[in-house]
Length: 394
Ligand code: UGA
Image (cartoon, rainbow, N blue to C red):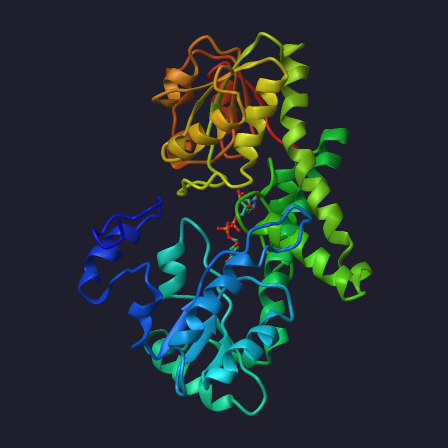
């Protein structure tokens, strides 16, 4: 599919980039086709294993399969998010071939992947002592980015590996912090959005990643904090990051909170019909990995509600997961946001797609709306007769 210029997932700008660069891109499933390359990027996933640790199967397999094609002068560049210590382990596998290893963590966000790749905030290079000459190799690869004076930091392997999990842990902590404040705000009738605006004006705090709601999901933040806790425990320093367990728990409580708010408004959810806008873990993505929206759909179904769900891009992946969970009879995927509302007593907005934020509530029959992302204009929904419930908002 990639050779035919088709993208295997939805990512704004990616298909266009793929077609513009197709003359210089070929895709293969045969490692032998890479034998001529000098620089080999390792970009495979490290999903969560049942223990919570990162599953290293794909990284190990890719490295092992690459070994026969490496030689003096080859450079392997690790980009996967890995437990600290992995690069040293891979180095021992790679160096007998004469090739050398660098570690170059990736910080792109889904939905902004093209922009973040071409104009990153910074580049991080991990190199082992005495191999600083490798910096020149990556500098050539990234020349157009470096010309724009993008900060480039060179460090040892362990630090480079840690930078990645530390960054994601910090972001997850920031989101859970504001969601913890949302819990408090709900208990005293305060407004977490105003609180976030007010503390966010302090440049030491910053307003970004302080949006309270149903919390973080996706293939990165949840599994990275769990993997970090596991790795720190293995290293005997688990206490240092045990707060990340709380970050995880606060985050998961947000999903339950939506059902509580709905019960407050509707009473017993069994037999009720609920409309759900959004299934992807964030807008501008069709990714449903650890999606809070899909979790809420499934929990509503298990509570006996009938869910009518719509997402602009994630319907295909969501349908497969709903089928697998045996919930197809309880969660109906419909063709539009308006159709989701047919017969529904309440609407839950679970992913802040622009088309949902832009809806004029006056064009819809008023009922209860639970704004799981605090992304709607509360006043206009109320003016249109809706009972508005935000997350941590008066
Ligand atoms: C995240 C990091 O932001 C990237 O820097 C990193 O490279 C990537 O993981 C990765 O490790 O590959 P991503 O998972 O694409 O990127 O998405 P984010 O934009 O970080 O959002 C994660 C989740 O947090 C989403 O579910 C989003 O809805 C939620 N979120 C974000 C909030 O609930 N509140 C906020 O204020 C911000």
